[in-house]
Image (cartoon, rainbow, N blue to C red):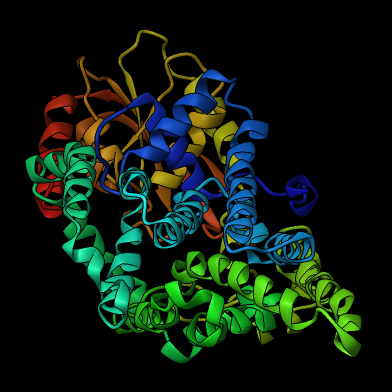
Length: 493
């Protein structure tokens, strides 16, 4: 189903290339994300590194999320109708959009949903094994994306307001917490040894992206993510508060509000909260199964299942990269109404940001490859890009032997380790380059020239220039290493 949602006019998205390149540089941490995504990238690499496998894993994590919701409904006592309703609400939702991209978000939603399922299983059975399973789930979620910390920040105060607070008297809670700490410790040690670059990353995120987040828009987006399941989610929230069979789960009634308040306080991106809702779909499905069991209400049962399917139709038309960029530009109004044209800079553009970030990469790699082939093949060449999107795309589509793109941006800063003297440099530069003639490099090379340009007015980077600097008169390796150390200090890394 995922493959029907992406038009073949689009390449992979910028972030996907970075995550895929991490497979070549396995570590316990990165500037951009914790390590679990790199492990999946390693699997993709050894499965052939094709687009099929890139798209397979987020689809798999989405499928597993649906399975966990199914098992949650069973644990809550739901029968066939509740199972079908819950599965339909999960399938025809924003999760399909989220799972079109190979990013940590797909596994993040799976982690949230699974940890909630574990908590439900513990509250219903009282068996301590669920605390240790929860420790494992939390650790995997943490090693995937630190976002799962928001789950705890919302759930802990919720537990304190209910009788489930006696969990804090259980020594197994603290033993399982120690297990979780042991499992995530390699990443914490990596952060410590590298000066906690996550702090710089979060600060940069807050200064450049979260500053543009509008809290009203955040709440509006929450309604749209599972719009077809809105009644079910509300039934789930209310049900955890008043439905007698759910008396052991009262903490969930408070948790949703505490978690949203924390997200809004930090002005988080709207999709960070998507993992909050699948569990309430499970609760709501069971509530509605019983509420619509008899009398005239039973005729509402097929209606409740049809609503998510029917409301998915307009979402299918505008929420996925299944229309060409030209079509979107000619029909902007529905995209604009839902705020899909607003980018991280807080401004409206011609295309949704993710869509624009999936254009022009293959062409860039092809043009860079053709330029690289003009250089002498004596291994004294290096390719430097302005950002991780350029470097990752070139490495993913690379055709020339020994052409590996490097950069001083994001995780690439730590992977830049020239092991030889360099004579020739290929520079891939953004359109806002402050030296379009490369004047400052001319004294240091015999020849400096613009070799090619990749022009695409619909891409996020509309113009990318490819320069060649031949015949170095300086020690390029030494200069690169000095620049690397300078950037690492800037990143506190």
